[in-house]
Amino acid sequence: MLGGGLEHFANIPKATQEISRVLKNSGIAIIDVPNLMFLGHIYQTFKDGSMPSEGEQQFSEQFYTYKKWKELFESNGLQVIDCKKYNGIYGTKRFNKFVVWIWNNVIRHFVPFHLSYCFIFICKK
Image (cartoon, helix red, strand yellow):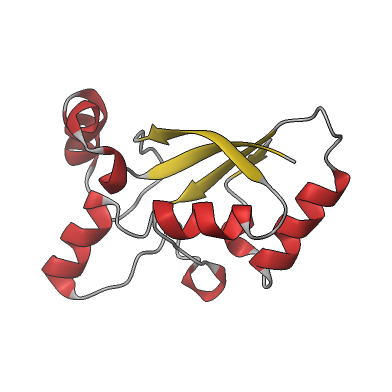
């Protein structure tokens, strides 16, 4: 499982090819990646014009949509067999604790797939 790291690679297609290369024929890759069109990112851009960033790491992050991530994986040796949305938010400094609590306990359950915080892709060779 690659949990929240692929978006920091300088060459994401090459990193994806490497995942495919080292994956056994019967293996499964579980890859967690951020969504460019996350509802919170859209709100933040509307509010102050800022680009998506998590943990002040904008110097080394790439955010893509579900469609772009899927195309990237499939054009670099992986077959997407499923994808789940994930909407839990815990380490942000952009919103106060009350807003995060409301998000995690109420709102996140109603967020549409394509506006989710991140995607968990299940892939094979």
